[in-house]
Length: 335
Image (tube, rainbow, N blue to C red; front, side, top):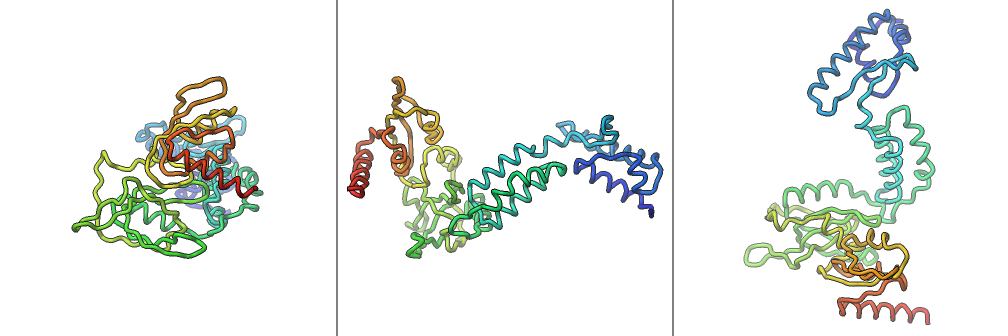
């Protein structure tokens, strides 16, 4: 065969080593039409290149080793930078279960994850394991792409930009409203992405918060948005912390922060503590627990209704009365 240049040959071998392939010296000599000494010099050049790079790396970097059982050279040390078979399979399953994207978007994301993270020799195995779920994937009903909007709003959050939103309040009625907001966070919950933003209005020449807690907008219902060219200020002590907010919100129902107490008489207290991260066990008597929690809004009522008679809301009294009224209305439907 026609000989390739040394640079092209070395680069070709380097790329294949990065892909996790085994290089046999005699086979490479035949492939490129050179003797084995030339191949050995190429491998030594790659080793020298990696050694130089490794002096700048804190994790030891990558290296070329000879595998005696397979009688060839392999690149080692880059495994930790790639996701393992089990990791990429787990992430793929979570993505598919989330139903966060259209089918076309989901397939593209999964393909990129697998090709970019899994060693090439394992790609087909991982692809085969999720092939059936990809085929039967059901996208959510809105089927709108919100990735570009999410990125733009993410930049607005980073830059503290005031934004005017055009929002579809009700999907069926197509009722649109305009709101000026201070965007503070993007979150995902139960199939949808959400923007968390403080509602503001202009008073005496400056924008002020309408409420002490952020409003919540489903991204697929945002019909339009534009930056107002004005910045809002956030002090370090007043900055919005998504992690703390997520602990106290259920089903993305906005509202005031309130302290609640409820009892739980079921058999799996871990599932309660996982679902309500702000929950704290006050007392325990066999399988009866008294629990305190801090929650935003009234989404907590929806969750409690899903727990049947294993949960009883004790306080605040106003919220307890709302729960009783909801239960009465539910009973009427079955009378």
